[in-house]
Length: 291
Ligand SMILES: Cc1cc2nc3c(=O)[nH]c(=O)nc-3n(C[C@H](O)[C@H](O)[C@H](O)COP(=O)(O)OP(=O)(O)OC[C@H]3O[C@@H](n4cnc5c(N)ncnc54)[C@H](O)[C@@H]3O)c2cc1C
Image (cartoon, rainbow, N blue to C red; front, side, top):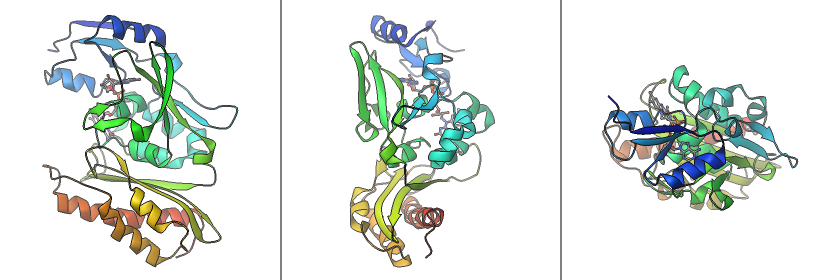
């Protein structure tokens, strides 16, 4: 049995914030695919829940007036897969969504929960890093917006205080227009498995020269991360196989994978280097570049 003491359904975002402040040891539950497992395992801190599942105000995928993409934190992965907006603008996020769990999980697991649980294997995280996504967070005294790069504080720890509710994600037009991208998840099996390594690449070329390059990983360190040194090292260089090789040689200095029961550090490093090549080549192809 779950050791659940209270669960209160919030009717609005403001009410969810208020309930969290009034109940300092309460946590949010959205899809519950992480929270319910923690409860079942008897982990501390989940006995009082504020339920934001089905809150309409968190469920949207749309453009704003400046063509920035807005995604509510309550959007589930099936919605991401089915969204024309996401497919037409940032298909890498569709690829990430398709790689999550199985159909039942994708129908209930939210994008917000995927990021707020703070795990390095979150499949949506590398794409959001590569897209420089902004996180819109409601708190008692208004709304703040922070880059995803400032959100992760350590394994399982994120930049949220009691009373904070992640409303959604904003991907500004300058971070997707003119870019091509791809997400690839390496796992021991194709379905219902957590990433051994996840890799997202987003890039822009002009006259066969790399004018912007972003590569982000899940499970390549304690939190999802971007490989900034690699990105700088390859900027403004001509698209070529030699450039791809350079990326895979440089990328190991940007990451710090660990050994776990799932895979050793050495194995993960091997996958990190190999994926940097495969995913970058795939994105070059999508950008119409020939190698
Ligand atoms: C069988 C199975 C397979 C899975 N496979 C994958 C997989 O392949 N890839 C993957 O990445 N994950 C996977 N997961 C993990 C999980 O499904 C995802 O992380 C999911 O996106 C979590 O979303 P949720 O809505 O269920 O979160 P919840 O469990 O409701 O919440 C997770 C955490 O986020 C907090 N939270 C939720 N919403 C908000 C918000 N709006 N603001 C602030 N805090 C919030 C909660 O308080 C909690 O701490 C799997 C889980 C299961 C059970």
